[in-house]
Length: 450
Ligand code: PA5
Image (tube, rainbow, N blue to C red; front, side, top):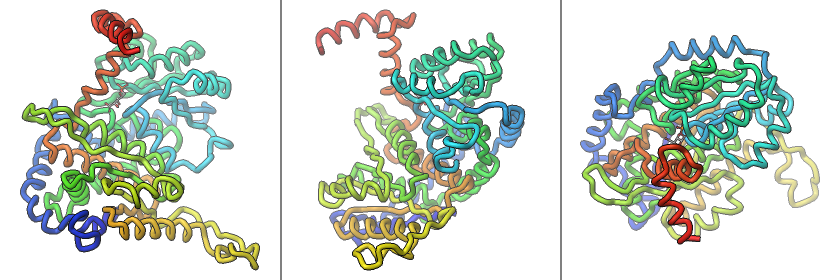
C-alpha cells in the first residue's frame, strides 16, 4: 500500500504557529470525517450525486470490452492520437507518462500523442509528423461539444478516409459527438453518467488509451479496489485520504492555502498537472452548499523534484509561509543507474560509484529536511514503485481526498460553473447557434475592455 506521512505538518516538529496538533485535530474532527466518508459511500449509487467514479474500479465487463478492442487493433497502427482536454486528457497524459517506457515514442509502436490544446503550430507540427492512414484517433469528450476537442477532431477527421481509424469516447446518448459517431458508424465507448471529467481516469476515458498502448488496466483497477477498500474505513486515523483532506482544510484555516504537489520522480511529473485540475476545479467555488458566497478554494501548484529545487524551493523556504507541500517519493525505481568513478581527483569524485537512485532520494530527503527546518508544513506520500497497481492507488486516493475536502469546505465538489462559463463564452464568440445573445453581450464587453 501507499504510505502517507503527516508528521512534518505537526506542531511538535514545525511549531504551533505553523503546524497542527494533528492527533488532537483527528480526534476533534473524528465524527465529522466519519460522517463524510459514510455519506460518500451511502450515496455513491444515487443518480445525480456525481459519485459514480467510486464504482469504476469494479467494472470488470468494461476491462474485458476494452481489452478485446485493443487486441483487435493490435499491430495495425503506428500511432495513437488522443484528442481531449481537461479531465478528458490529463489522466491519460499522467498515467501514460508514468507507466510507459520513457522516450518510447522514438522507437516503439504505437507511438502515443495527446492533443489537449489548440495551438495551430503544435497541431500542424504533429500533422507533419504522423501519417493519418496509420494513426488510430481516440476522440474523448463527455459533453460531445467542447470547442478545442471538436476543432482538432474536425481537422483530423478531414484527413482520415477509414472510419475504423476513429474511436470515440463520449456520453451514451447525449451530445453532438454521440450523434456524429452513430451517423458515421464509429466504434465508441461510453463516459458513464455521474462521472465528472476530472474523476474519469478509471472509466473508458483513461482505460481505453491505456490498453491501446499496452498498460495492464486490470492490474490498475486492482490497485483502485484495494485503495477503495482501505478508504472505506471511516476512522480518520486509518484513512489516509481523509487525513490529507483534513490537514489541507485546517492548514487553509491557518492561512496556508497553497497546495504544492512535488513528486521526486520524472515519470510522475504529470501527476502534478492532474492533481492541479482535480483540486482547483473541484474546490474553487463561489458559493457553499447553503448558498452563502464564500469564494473558497486552496490553490494547487505543480512542482517537480529535483528540478524545482533549483527554482521554486527558494520561495518555498524563504517566501511567505502559506504553502503545504505534498512530496511524492518512490521507494523502488524500476532500474538502477550507477555513476561512473571518473574524475577521481576532483571535487565531483564523491559522486562516483553512487547511484542516481541514491542521489534522487538524497535530494528528496534534503529538501524535506530544509523545508521542515524553515517550519514549512509538508506531507509525504510514498509509492513502493511506479506501476499500474500503485498508480491506481495513488490517483484514487487523491480523488477521495478531494471529495472529502469538498465536504469539509461544504461546497459542491463536482460542478464547474466557472469552466462552463468559459466554454459558453467561447461558443458565443465563435458563432455557435443558440449563443447569439451571449455573443452580443460579449462583443460589447470586448469593445469596452480592449
Ligand atoms: O472536469 C471537467 O469537467 C472538465 O475539465 C472537462 O473534463 C473538460 O472541460 C472537458 O470536457 P469534455 O469532456 O466535455 O470535452
